[in-house]
Image 1 (tube, rainbow, N blue to C red):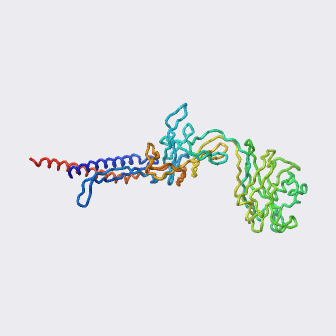
Image 2: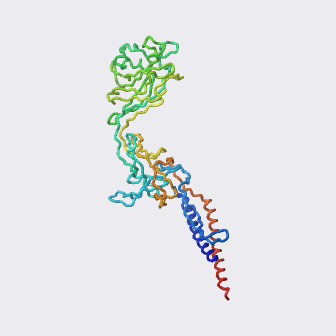
Image 3: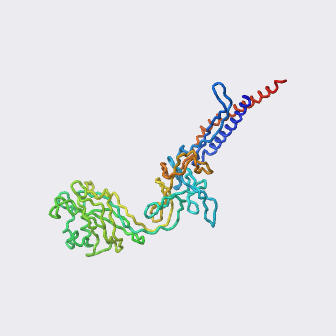
Length: 463
């Protein structure tokens, strides 16, 4: 029986090594397939009967062992919608099964892949090179917030985006402790200040009407510093150029001018580019910025409101001037100028979608003809408790099984934009395994041949 057992074992060895050869062949053939995960061969012995005194021949089985958790190399891509996962995670995708009324019909089963060579198809969906469609969560482009939490197929609409009126201006800056205005002279006390009595035709600039007349503009420009300019938008998307200037109105050595004698600044915006005579040319925002000896606003000014901001007759309404936690500071500056560190507003004109791309934060970003970039969707990454128990499908996709568990949102991997994950196959390693498998298969055939010869010798003993 040992001879027959040896032959039986050898036959299972041939089958096992044949399966291993198939895995190696599959790996080498897909060494250039994006997101492909190689298949290893796990040999497992089956024992019929074995003790230290007596051991009966057993068999061997070859099982596939997946390498879904083994990272492939990340390669740069020139396509803005291509992406790769660095670390743990899978893209959620759908499969198209038909087309009805010139619209795709999708299988309702979720699949998963690491293949990230997605491009926009004619329906606006993101489809990878294997034909699977990307899923994610829609984002409201105006608020930047996700719309729900349930992933669905990402479809990019080519509609116009409506104009949005400016309501907030984020602004931070440092004001030079000694402003180098046109008339400032370090040897002349208070020459850097713009005092209440500066304008003879409008002596109550800072306490009464709060604006600079057109006829006094040159006096104002000579005693103030440029604070930056920005384009803002009205309710229908008309651009409005808002120019800012800062004027220092008091310092610690000028206590007679204003009670308290602290360093004080006022912010102005140009209200008209064509005004003449006694009409307003620059408006005071109406917020005093008072600084202590450490250059910090006291009290703190984190925000202010520009009431009815109007430029050349275009009214933008009330604008929130947001200084944030950095606020506005007054530190020494060798140039004696205003250093603007942030100036950004939230409005924009209408525009059509020009292109889309994937950001490193995993969001689909649309670029519009008005120059605005808005988030349109967020790509969903999922993970599994048992990655290698997933069922392998065509095109580098997997399906969940009872052994793998259900998909869990919130994988730890990071999305890398404009990149692709290469196959994790190592050709040199596969050739080494190929040689070993060939030798094992050849040696196993010798067992079959030898066992056959021994059986014939046994049968011929009666002769």
